[in-house]
Length: 175
Image 1: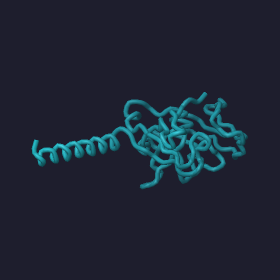
Image 2: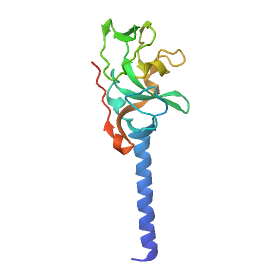
Image 3: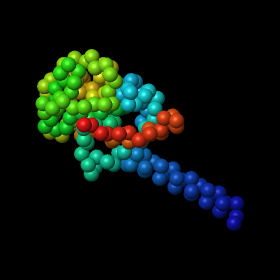
Image 4: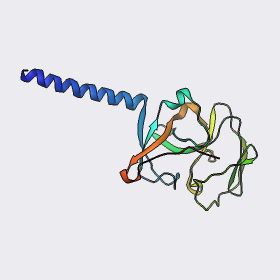
């Protein structure tokens, strides 16, 4: 094999790998970095997580899903879906009620000294999201964020891979 044929083989292999990586990142999975403490203790600042960008093409977001959405151009938020379209959300003494039923949230820290909120009804095509660290979370309770349109959802977080000693799957279970 000539030197140029070998160079071409290497170049072609590298180009194919780069194109495949770009396609995967563009359509299937994307890496996001946790910034801030709004999802503490579930997610920690500087953790890196994988987000499935394809999942909501064939499935609807469900309460408990941890989603990434575009808050404004160039700024993404990571929050937990609490309510879906048609749900009536109310927070009474720090406890979330959906359709007049108290939900269990075992992922929350013990202190729940947040204010009462609602009731509000989630409009069609929208979601109500909240951070797990409710005292320090800019989420659907804030009028600047409000309800999240399905069009703004980038995907569902499913795996934390960095730092490696904290690698784990992300549970979406809400009771």
